[in-house]
Length: 275
Image 1 (cartoon, helix red, strand yellow):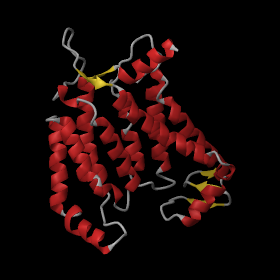
Image 2: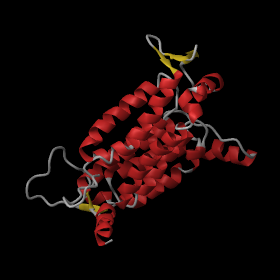
Image 3: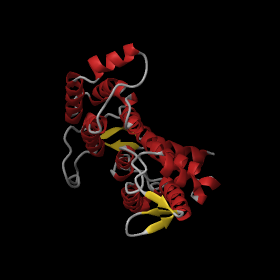
Image 4: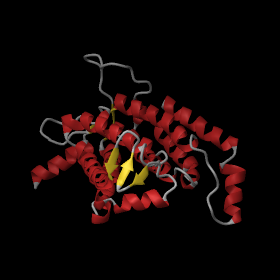
């Protein structure tokens, strides 16, 4: 029990590298405005008072400029935790606007978790390796990064479980989606998905999709294989764009790869868990 408790302590409380956390903070400051405004925004369905609030406040150019200004301050690293929470509060109403709702909520959830780090211990990180003898600034314990990593795992894992149903593996669900969903881009004819040069049987596509998401749910935890998992994940999402348009959920998911790929967490040699 003591050995497992020690491993859990290292997994949750190993220090996060301050320079890598600063790069992640800057990435958030760039990606968050893109994810929230590049696809367009509109008022959600509901009472007239709610729609007027969106039309008169949340969807006005001034509100967008406010969020952009807060993002710029976050990039500069001034009081990053307070500014990060402020940005999350400002963006919260927009996370429920129609369109790319899930992608906005994924990014916003990751941002809230990231706000628990002291990512301003290094304001402007340098390219390249840290000079020998230079101090290693800690941004705090690793558990906020672990939350983001687990978020990515759950995104893929839940999808893999949902796709493990016999109806999906047989291709029945894909055929129904092709008929019912306007964002399903490929044509399904004679039990195959027409991709132009090739036609993929719907059963093969269903099995491949379920296996890919299951592999991605665990691949990033396999240490030296995480880069291979990232390349595979990018290829998976690019190929998926030819079949179905999931708005910006694929971009939000790929952004979470940084939680594994940036050298944020440097576990001790005694543990087999990598970050």
